[in-house]
Amino acid sequence: MILVLWDIDRTLLYTGDIDRRVYKETFTSVVGRPPAALPARGTGVTMPLAVRELLRVNQVPEQDVETFAARIVDELPERLAGHRELLFNDGVIMPGAMDALAAVQQAEHLIPTVVTGNLRGSAETKLSALGLIGYLDTTIGGYASDDPHRPALVRIAQKRAAAKHGGPFNRDNTVIVGDSLEDVRTGLEGGARVIAVASGTTPEQQLRAAGAQHVLADLTSTTTLLRLIDQDEAL
Image (cartoon, rainbow, N blue to C red; front, side, top):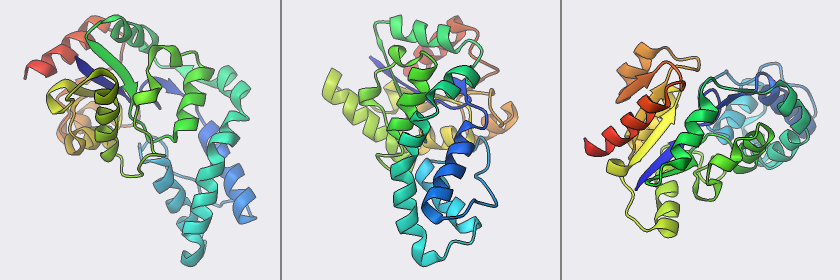
């Protein structure tokens, strides 16, 4: 069995400015004023860390950062769920993503789930709004709501998968598919091989230099993707 950990944003789907809109609304609700700056795009940083940085760059006093951060993190999934129609109308499934998800799900020896910088509620809202959640077992995923340190999410997902399917799951039989430098770091430090997809803001050369074992331009060749997932196990 091979555990396949999918990243979500810019790997499987793209939601444009919706996340940033939700950050702005939630910051304004909690802090009492709109933010002058918003999180950087496409970094892959977990939501709790992005929220703390958002508070600091907007000059929130340091003694208030943790209290405000906890409140914002608590509110983000519900606020995103309130924009479900906008996600459905404006969200985009990345090229090849649906066929790739289906191919992985249909392979009997592959176990598809997610490791993501999203909070679990936010991840499930995005995936369900765009019709992708049925291809993944989200109950065994790793989410920013589990740990803000993204590499730790690999082991969390491995433990959940082992409890459900029997184990062990480790670097030899766990593969991350993601688009950012954070996805690469998550695999290298967390204990998974990395298939990077240059569908986000990071060029192929940077993904390779960061240590990704393989880099694809996109997910349009399911044959190639499946071959690389199986090849990783044999390395």
